[in-house]
Amino acid sequence: MESILRKPVIIGIVIATWAAIVLTGMAILWNFTSTPGQLGAPPADRPGDTRLARSLGGDTLVMIVHPRCSCSGASLGDE
Image (cartoon, rainbow, N blue to C red; front, side):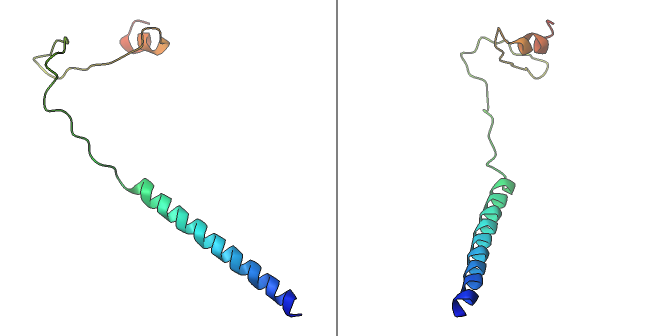
């Protein structure tokens, strides 16, 4: 009779332990995903060896595209 009573208790302990481990893992992942990363610092000035002309009146947008990508033409307004 005791062995019959022990099995459900052992199974309950195993399930409770498993659930605690899963919930702890989920809490760790939740904390990781909701923690912001380090802020990046943009360079103070442009590289000196660039051949790109700088706009004197405002900002300059630099876009790097692949010449054979269909999205490149659409982004540049060619299509």
